[in-house]
Length: 222
Length: 222
Image 1 (cartoon, rainbow over the protein chains, first blue to last red):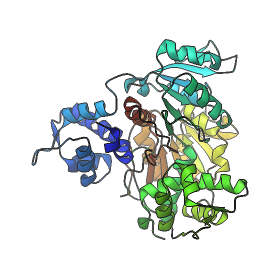
Image 2: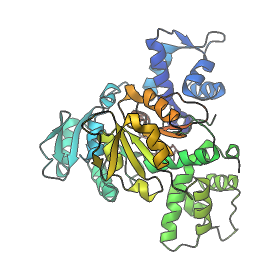
Image 3: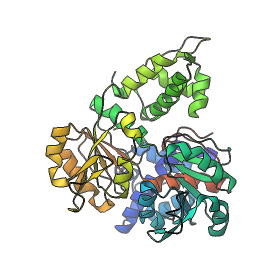
Image 4: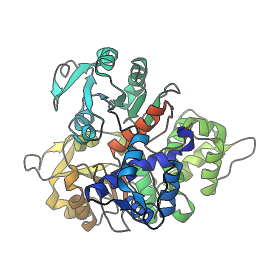
């Protein structure tokens, strides 16, 4: 299926559906209604039905959706039927926090290497993950089959690191700095900007409007 | 203005507009066209015009929008005409990374206190910010006027911390754990889930579709 048929908003909700469905599967639920799935994820049922329909998944009237089938289909859509080895650039507090977060490996994104330019850190390990010099990036990407680069450096180094990741052949970048990066069209970038998340919180708080959303993606305001 | 007139997707884009506009203001640009602002943020011009119209801001044909006026209006919409003091729960790697991130103070979200339950950390400072015991949360929130709580603990403690934040009167929570939290409707929650961001990257990468988005919010797929 061409991704052009699936909206960015739908893609942004797929991880939340998947997480809810995996919990349902663990609870031995065989089927789920769009109403129940909607409630678990915090969107409305029509959105669930529309999102799943865009993946060409339809439920059975009066029965709902098959949980295991949904888990399988959404996992395949998200590319989770394979591992995506990750390299983290920057072995500071954030890089170390990521290295210590076992949830990434469980979810198919094992961190294989950290990179830094501080000689005192090169050759050490963080949570069993080696720290190498940024100069060794290209060789390591090839050697370890790195698919995703995470930029966890100070903001003023972000573009230089992005250029190095692109040169090394990386196709996906997660940028944790406040600095937007410019990459060729073939490279996929997501940015996690904490100040942006806080600004969205303050928008709602000053209005006294509660809104519980799943994951940095504004799913829907309740 | 009631926030019900402004969609969650629009709210999600306001921080990106603001960041681009602040850069333009720094470059001495007096006006900006919707085309140029759209290009800077990575959305299409019609989206920019629609978003700004929902804030009741209209440009002048052939001239565009007044940059300083836009900065002011969007800042007010986002509640950035005041400070939002932040407490971070969890003084581990992630909490320390946040404490060391000066960008938050610059952008109106100063971290005033860290909380932990590890006695070895209580009474210490991280980047000049005191670490207190979680038992002192309610008193500290009142004392320091804390408006936002950031959950940077292991996932299995997320709900307990959320309950404590709500009890202490916090109205906005940023949850960095993989665990969704349940809060009363009046409390605003955002979650930054790194695995979700990586899953969205893998969706696009397996399709070979490049998409550069601003900030954890899927603005628009190009």
